Image 1 (cartoon, rainbow, N blue to C red):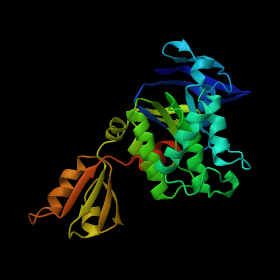
Image 2 (tube, helix red, strand yellow; image 1 turned 90 degrees about the vertical axis):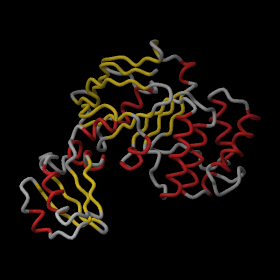
Image 3 (spheres, helix red, strand yellow; image 1 turned 135 degrees about the vertical axis):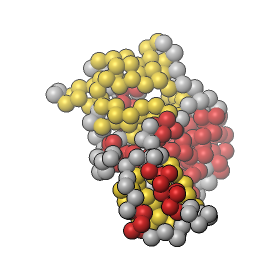
Length: 300
């Protein structure tokens, strides 16, 4: 288990991370989200011992992280760190050796991973010849080839199309099921929802939300309705507590001031006895992010 306790990092008079507390257990994924500059990368750098915390502690199984522990950490940086003039094989073998893997084992596993992630290219190709997406897959291979116990992934989906993003999500889930501790940051809220067991939101270095994903969503109430029914917008908007009605796909998306308003909306749309679609849910993670972190929408 990794534990961050009262973790604070100050740069002069700026507090980059303010009294953070978090636990990361084997076989669990924590999504760390927030705007640019919220403190995510600073947190990762402290976990990697690139920088020291001003206050607080980081422990692995109740002891300070050792050099041996660090060999068991895989880190995917936001700013990719591949050497452009090296071949894929030279690059991956080099990183694997830093974590104690033999050259032979690394070469053998590399071929397996190239096929697994559907990398377009050969192990002898230079990194500079790869597309951005394929280079990112190679970076992931270099991060996970040693099957580390702790994975720190900083914006792993940046630059990937939906198909390749799903490939990467599948591998992250496989590593989770094999017992890895995983923490990652992303602006892809859909990916965060699919992968995360726990969520931690940062705003200006402060933790604004922390806990299980479903618990966080439910804490906002079931204030959203997706509806497909032949009722006019004006009639829906006339219901006290219906804040807005917007077209969404074949239906409409309603925002409510209170989840109890849903009963009155349902009574109106079901008066003829049949409603094609009525789904009352908590706000999505994207909506919560904009309310709580970006501050774009107020919580009524």
